[in-house]
Length: 271
Image 1 (cartoon, rainbow, N blue to C red):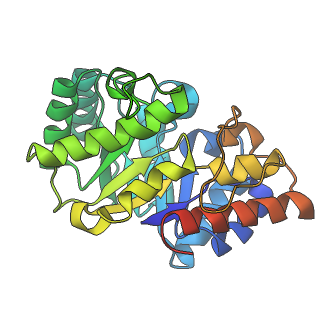
Image 2 (cartoon, rainbow, N blue to C red; image 1 turned 30 degrees about the horizontal axis):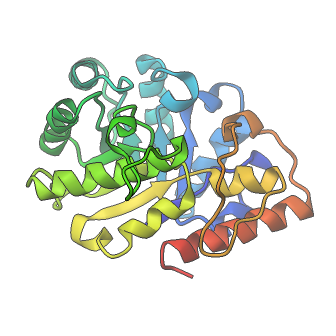
């Protein structure tokens, strides 16, 4: 699995040492020209760049017309088509409208995010993305996960563990039901706890899970938290990396970030 940990502007170039590709949040382009310029520089250097529609940060996808404009200006390797949180029909409609009225005129691969609030809806959305997207993304925090995640003893898990177990359950169930399309690359959007990704190591090639993104190691480092070796943290920092984008990172914080990123790679079998 290729990894990207979103990072403050002050260490974006240094992030090349721990990131396999670069992950851009489009809404920051409006206020942070240095941020936009970094991704142009990254592409010129031959790196992959994934452009995100900032739905997690904004609660809804970035304005489609502006998104199209920025996508054409950046010309990334991949971009996430505007979607609607946990809404299958809204996401499918958003995809169709975007492709009909304003898809950027670039050669970037189109990433479709699976959205829904029931297994049946998630399956419907997954099948649509399998038929239409170049790359399929699965989110870490569907509310549906809360309804299907229990401990081995049958008790309720905590929220972070429910998200971990829920995405694992969804992926395995889609595979078991013959719905998973291993001919398409897959992306895992975000994370609750880093240890979730241990589960995918034996099956990542079989299921074509190509990439993931999470700012968890970086935000944890900025808050002074170091990962437990091979495990990560038992909590999730509440602040979003986008809100820390202008943070100046001193040597101590950078050391914590680099340590966490190294441990994350060990968690996914790349240590």
